[in-house]
Image (cartoon, rainbow, N blue to C red):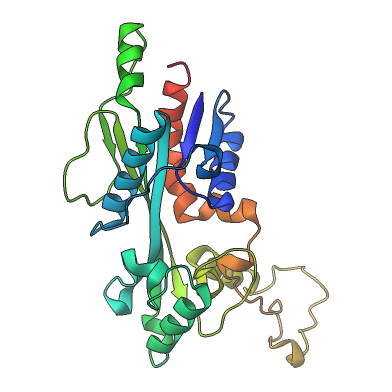
Length: 267
């Protein structure tokens, strides 16, 4: 079955493909907006990530008659009361200017102490099954997925319709003061995931008994006797694609759609 990912971002398409591959989901051919006849795309006017994701998925399904997946995602910073939020891609005033958006956030957070720099990447994904496909499946006696699925934390201005599924993924971390890394886009270079802080703390823990000859690490390694050299926690732009998929907000949201994609594979 062909499934449309309503985006021109090849990285989003690749992320879903890796999610499907690691879970051994067969029979799904992913398409992007570059693979279908162009249609007028509605502006993202929703008040929430869920509103925008569902709007894009509905438009894609209506114009292409394909099962369609769309997402809306962004950065939610505690100190900025959840902003940039749905405005993440255009926080600086111009849509898609990653450098300008990142620099504006860094400027706004410049005087915020380390203990108040918590943030989260949030992704809400919507999957919409076209009405024609729902009707054919019912006529053929195939099992149609339950009408709606919501994960905890999804916010919609209006209820979803039958054949619409909305899920949410979140990735907690913190905002650092200088960008690092090139594997990613958007705010990835200034976001350190919680998992990375945990990893760095474990690697800097005291050596196990019998580990080495007991000699301390040189002070030039910014360590002390009996401790491993300090390892800097990586930003999400310093993770490999596989590492990011296993942890990221979008990967967590997309993984929740896998049972639905399995069930519609024979429709």
